[in-house]
Image (cartoon, rainbow, N blue to C red; front, side, top):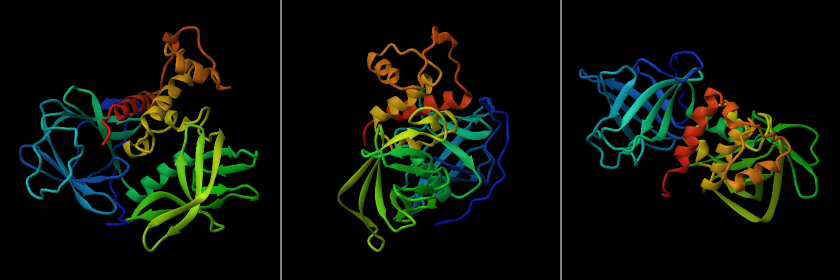
Length: 318
């Protein structure tokens, strides 16, 4: 299953959020970690999805069509393997699912028993591994400094320039159980476990054991503070420029997700009623509060990401 390229023809649409027509047989979908193949459609219109991660299969769910175009309900679990995993352990048969077009991408949006967004799947035409690598490159990208003022750079295309180096060079994201991990190996052979913080990244020095697929950190940690992002203003500017995956958001704790979500509003000058948020963003040099919040307008991508981040914040701890 590893490195299988899943090629499909993607349906293109406008940049606005809108209901699409229907899920097509043969299409592939992902949440940034798991992929699903719409591999069968019954005579009654029930669509069966089968898939898994890069390491194992056994993920499945089914959608029942409704009388309204672009709307479905989650069907009963497919009988069979008792260890099969559904699209989300929080969803139940009968939950509403919609097929939408957001920023030109086809998106399946799953809602819980209370009608709140729970998770999403994106239609895609490439490699799940590349999706995961791109997510890591996205959250690492930026210019940084350490406590001594030494400069570090991580690019959007998987390159880095460490302190004392003269140019950007590719870094390798190591795999654990066939899945890209948060361990990297630089062109010079240095190995780090990457830990995201609200200020940037902590580089945990150590050694990656490829045979046992494990990272052994030493006592050396370099804390990096992000000074700028290639995506724009703010610590997590990518949340305003591209649709994010549930898997990417899973890299952050709830407190950080709240900051990421509200930073989207802050980039437009939104004035916050929560004292801690207003105090936090008032310290950001790029923040310019507006006189009237009614004037703040988010893009389609930003509106979608705000909803998905909020849904991720609301997930109970596993």
